[in-house]
Structure formats: structure tokens, C-alpha cells
Length: 283
Image (tube, rainbow, N blue to C red; front, side, top):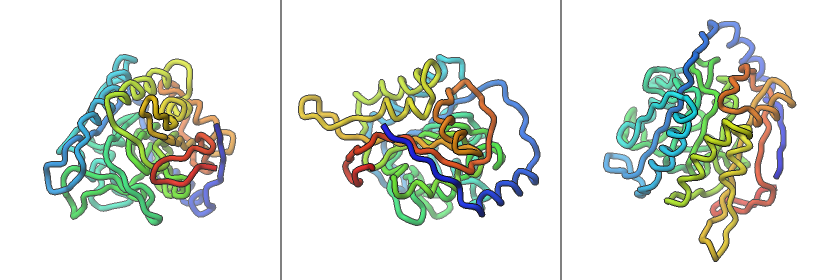
């Protein structure tokens, strides 16, 4: 298992300090809410390969969160559209802080196809074209209280969602003071045998393991001929105002409600030497 920490670029620190002065304080929200977004069939004017178990994976996480006392909210299939994830500070059509947006919850999970590029990092597939796009990009997002939202934990069941050499592209989203971002380096896989893992992330993230640690520990697999597991390389990013705070963010449990902090530093948790499909081996 490996971790590595990096400071936020200086210009972003200055911008965050100014933003904190301009935005009003956010009220406390007693009821914690888990939101999920899943696509299995692409039948609209955007395309994607069918994955019938994806909504089950998302649902297993969300229902376990509900069993732990969280309010459940979801928008699946044709309702998975870019405006729910884009922030108005990044794109004019973004409504992520509104009632139907991902940043309205305190923890959120999206289950969809993912591509990547060096400019935007993760590019997630949407079900239906709106605002001339079938995609949401990491650089169009801004998650957390500093941007008008609530999100502390952002999860992606999506290929290439946190590629090692493109994880800097998540600084923009982290500017909102989200605590933890999780995803995958290279390809991840969908199927009935993966459903329980998502429930276990929710369970372990409440009981005895930080959410960032639970994601990496639970989702990692190595290819074996005898059980047909594919090699999967999960990654968790923790953010904080100091190096130690960013590292400790990976220990935060869902119910902890730790203080929001400026993301001056980022710590990456990963499995050393993990070698996925469609991605280089990790350090």
C-alpha cells in the first residue's frame, strides 16, 4: 500500500483564500444524505455499452448508507445529465448545488463509463445530450461547501476516473473543500460479483475504517485465472490545509463530519505496483 502527498499550487491557495472571504457561511445540515447516479442502458442520443449490473452496484452502496441512518436520494438512467455535476462557477449550465445536483448530498457515487485526457482528466459519460454535451469533465466540477454545496465524499465507479498521472485535474473540484475523492486508475469492471464490494465500502466507511482507506482496500483485485477477477487499481485522494490533514482525511468515516479545510495539500492512497488494464503500472 502506498501514499504520497503534494501541495496545492500557490495560485490555487490564494484563490481559495479569496473565495472563503466572499462566500457566506454554510448552515449545518443535521440529516446526512447519500446520492447515487447510475446508467445501465444508453437509449438516448448519447452512446455507451450496456452494463446491467451497474445500478445494482450503486444501489448496494446507497442502501447500506440508508441502513446507517442516511437519507437516500438517487437519479438514474435518463436522469444522469451533465448539469447535475457541473458547477456554475465552472460552466454556465452547471446546477450541481441545486436540489437535483450531486453537490446537494454529503456523499455521492456515480456509476458510468469513463474516458480521460490530459487536459480534463476524467471524462464521464452522460445518458442524454444537453448543452451540446454527452459528458461531464473533472475540470467542470467544484465540490463542497466553499462552492455552495455540501459534498464531503465523491465516489466514481468509472474507468480512468483517477488516473495516476492526471490526478492533478481534480484540484479544480477539490477547491470546493470536498474531503475525499475516489475512483480508479485504468479500467474497472462491472458485474454481480462486484455488488457486495460497494455495500462493504459503505459499511466499513462507517464502522472501523476511513472512507478513503475502505475504498482502496475493498476495491483492489489482482487477476487470477481461478476466480476470473481482473486487476483493478482503486485510488483515493484526501485533501486538507496541511500535509498531515490531507493524509488524515483518508481516515475520516462517513459519520465523522470533520471540519472543511482548504485543499492546500493532497494525499493519494493506492496499491503499489498495481498493474491494471488500460493504464501503466502504479509506482
